[in-house]
View 1 (spheres, chains in turn cyan, green):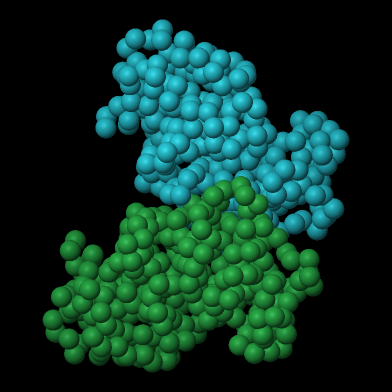
View 2: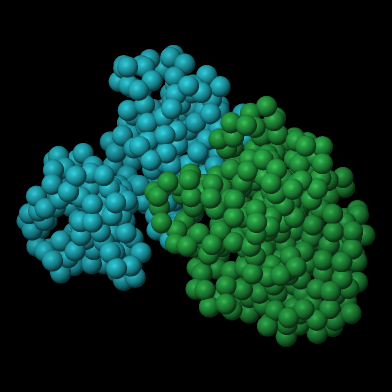
Length: 291
Length: 291
């Protein structure tokens, strides 16, 4: 069975077709420009596969995910020029008479990791996936369903206890200043140090400050949702950074709740090469085709 | 159908029998002493009702709620003398050959408010209930199920951005110092002002500081879970205080997500006289009896 995946990011689109074993058969990647041209390229790609049975879209946001809502399938209030109030799902539906699933980029990745964990015999029923890159967001799957009834989560915008050595940094979120995204997204490196993150060595104290905040995000998630696993993806994250995050998490938790082995609880994605969302999309498209 | 409710608090127990319309027929209340005597009083109370069909327990914690766990039904690591590692559910099961549901106090209250909202025609599918009293905790219901896979939530222990006028207050949580509970539980009034909360007028700036933190708790909950409603109960909460909380929430959110009318979103319990948990227990016992 042939399934389609659109991973719609603010800077690039990744479109793929694959089968119900989640194997990619063909894949294209191109920069995000204006909505009509960008989505048309996805449509042209999928039109090459007349046997396609379903598609799933994991999109940047904010988006409307409530099925009964008037603007279901739209990108809503994004500051990205041209994309606000764009009927993304509608344009796909006009082009294909197929089941099409619609969710956020991080939900797609969360679902991909949820599915992968089963393939790895991990028996994970509840999982949160964070991306820490240009922006910060998270999605949570519990028993195969996404958390978020009034809309999708926006865990990148929570407030945090400030690190004592970071009190003068105002944060860079245009909405909230020093929310999680304003304190740990990729561009904060330039704002704090004048250097890009990839040029700041892991021995720099700024990474400890980052780990303190990301450790708090993991703590909030644990105390509010109690998933079995928290996965961190995105350009800022590395195994060496997560080592620091686990230390901070452990100190913040101070033995209050047992989450098992920290190395298994706070982890990098199982999917390699940022592939979580594509795998999630295949699985969601497959599920949608069986409805 | 006769149903039993135990609301097991750290200072008092409330036991009640009622029917599937959630009406209380008999109720007793007594102080929490040692576990055996305290639970025996509940058993003696219920033994008067041979027609009882099911019981639900909403207990202080931490407790083990995972059904497959070795210590399912136990109170676990509480500092409360005598209660740690006590097999609460086991003692009830030895006394009654009935379906018995077991959950946390705040889950019980959350479920009660969830059920009540349906009676009030509110169509609430997802709801979080916070108690702010001697301690701080929260429970969340989504589509009739409680959030919490690795165990129950402990939302009272998240960290928060500190209020600029409160930076010198260390917080009173023995585990975490200035976590939510360490900053806004009832006993913080005496720690900050030397006076009991009921003697601190709402015009005192300490209430603004409290509202800033509770507003952040509501923000975290919104951004992580996106429930349709957040209910606040417990001795510290009043409608006048929630007015301040809504203002803080609104400023912190800064228009980022729409939660509808704030008066309907951040609210006092629908159940009067702290009755949420009893109603929740009746509904959970009823559900358990139909399994």
